[in-house]
Image (spheres, rainbow, N blue to C red):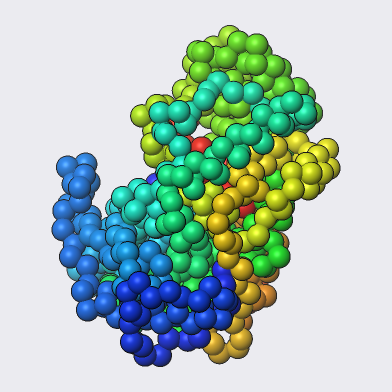
Length: 552
């Protein structure tokens, strides 16, 4: 699942540790398709690719869109094998962005700061690009970290300019206005099953044999090649949402290559939960967060007039949805777009005032704010389609999924009785995995023993819906020596660089000084947003509802 670009601004057998660069495979040589043989070949291939990348480095220069970027931002590429079992086979390039450490103390301008290497970031998804992460160094909350680290972001394989995936003609990607039944009819289900089958078929047809190589284990291997290309002996990394999952894979595969790691809003890495059960848990958690939002609106009925209780606010929302079903706002926003906009508010509570104002205005006769927030823009279709294609490919490739529609229907019909808000939309997002063509990975059993991995930092909000809190507890249990910092009674997704000074203090102390708090540490919740329409939220929301689930 992807987090905001920082708040302000599912594998095979465990591979052996890489201690030397083995000989390269002969181009075109068949790799036996058994778990053990393939794992060994991928292990050798990763070492080969990393050694090559270390020798080549990255030739950073002006970014393709340099005219729109600050001068401190530079871009380059790193080459990785499409298939790590065949390191001399087809190669792909990953787009990388960097801003050099400023070496300037933001509080004491005359004091030089010691450079500590590169800090690599991934915002999640699957399907999100972190290419422009280095720009956060311009924000006050990040200046101390930007002084000590080269800030490095990149577009993972399949995303953006990094060997992009596509499963559908972007011109036909947006289909608004759409319906969003919380208890879909049998005919509606049949229609969505047919769409899921067509989407899975489109992915196979458009990507061909390359499709099988877009998965989380390869994302972890790519990260090690990037580390080597940057000249880093050990990796300093921050991953948000889905970025925490392949970072956990990395920590399991390459523990000796880790310097420091921040897992922000952690995905549950239990192999039995990748990814079908994680998505069920996410749908259940979103119901709780949707209730939190409605309670907040009810407390501010004097501002929004949507009801004095969470139930009354729900009736206002349902009234708006029914009206949009009959007559879409601006001809563009139907119940599906309304739910998508409010799902985003489940990720980021700083969107609550803006969304509540739009709903209030719509019910009072002004559809403008709602159309502005919820409409789908054709110019964004290509990027949104690419993001969804990568999301689906990675999650479908990562693990076995139920292939019988009756299983999906049974499980989610039960769940929707108590969690109707997001359940079926989550099903439609992930259902192509039931009809996926090609082999599946066996999820890696994430875990490290005492002393195998340097101390790591896990951040989690107690009421996070996108990555439910139980996932952070599971990751904390599996990574020996990890520290878990919990923001209590809060649910924003993606905590680093956000409004909680306690959380940010722990992140800075860890990244800048290697200093961690107690094994389990709590921070009080950040203040609730103020009840006014306000400007558009600064948090970067998922491009499309569902495209960001780790679970998605």
